[in-house]
Amino acid sequence: MKTISILLVAAASLSFSSLASAQFAKPDDAIKYRKNALFVMQQHFARVGAMASGRVPFDAKVAADNAAIAESMSRLPWAAFGEGTDKGDTKAKPEIWMEQAKFKAASEKMQAEMSKLAAATKTGNLDSVKAAFQATSGSCKACHDDFRQ
Image (cartoon, rainbow, N blue to C red; front, side, top):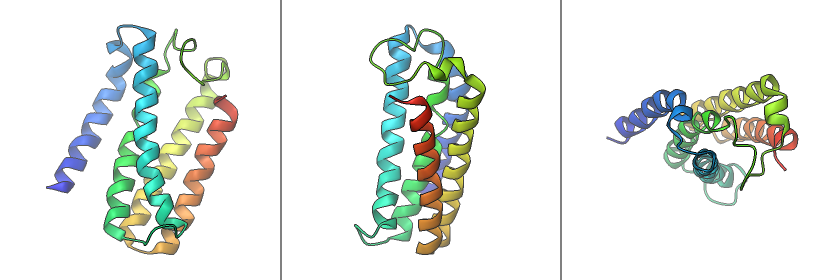
């Protein structure tokens, strides 16, 4: 049942992300949406990180469940960086809109690393999880360094 739920979330995220930008009534709605999507992704990613760093005991199933959610969530926020969402309650730098190709590449890199992390958690091998977590964390940091105030 849990696998079905994760697959449904993934399918919904894929279809919703392409339609999301057209569904925001105002820029503030898009900003709230992307901030919430990133927050949920970060919460699940951090749970895997706590295991990878040894702060909590490693549980392969819990790691895999959280990585799968983080991976699904990693696809959602990008449609909410549309026109007019550079102002308001946001830490997004103007470079997002000035360097859109670079921003898109950074988001795609993070998504790819998040997929690798999800795959690593399925192996049950903590060393693989640690390596994948580090790579994913690095892609997050790189994007924050370039595109987040």
